Length: 159
Image 1 (tube, one colour):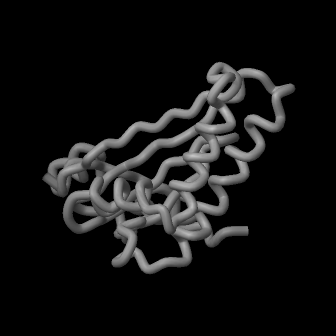
Image 2: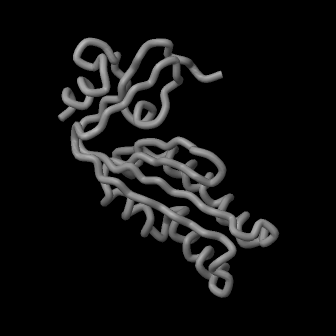
């Protein structure tokens, strides 16, 4: 069981950061050879990123949202792009292999991602009776009291 923090907590991160949402959609479940390799590639990427220093990669952390859907936190879009395009990392070869596998069957498996650049202070969070989660897991947690006691106060305090 993860360490549950019973107090009201808020995430605190210095500077700008990027929220990256990524996922896949299986359109034809019976085409196992098309979607299983894509599904199995993501854990390898997350392991690679989680074991390398964040100062090197810019990767701050992630949470799995459900089957094939993940939210990731990055220091910058430049860090995210550098990882995605690095032939030495897990992503680039997996992406090339996926495109070769899907060349004549694009409708079998869908992939998607969205990137959001968040300027310093342009966010608000609250975690209560939760283990470290989301941005709070990828950054620092501070008590959501006083100047951070409401969503408006937290948002205004950060901006």
